[in-house]
Amino acid sequence: MTDPGFFQKVYDVCRLIPEGRVTSYGAIAKYLGSAGSARMVGWAMNSSGRMADVPAHRVVNRNGLLTGKSHFGDSNAMQNLLKAEGVKVKDLKVQDFEKLFWDPMKELN
DNA sequence: CCGGTGACTTTTG
DNA sequence: CCAAAAGCCACCG
Image (cartoon, rainbow, N blue to C red; front, side, top):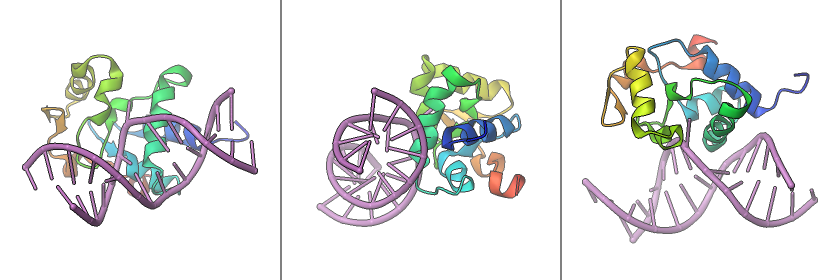
């Protein structure tokens, strides 16, 4: 709390993602000031389930591809969650990704 | 302090 | 077009 690490920030940003919107690991990493540590963002999500309930399904890779779906348990879980929020997903890929892309740098400033 | 690790990203072959 | 490698950096033991 007094010493928020990278992970803690990642959780916070993920929870700030509005429904029906998505973002990329790199964007979050960049927002945190550590561009290039995109992998750490994904890794943080891996622990997120144990430390905090984070909508990791709103975070996808740079192509809008649901790369992390494998960690949800079922391949359809992540895709299903996004669809439930109004995000169109096809073949584990976000449709209109550019339109639904939520940039913390821009939105949160 | 050091090494392993990883849900990324980009470049090369 | 598909496959592989490297660069990247923070957390954990």
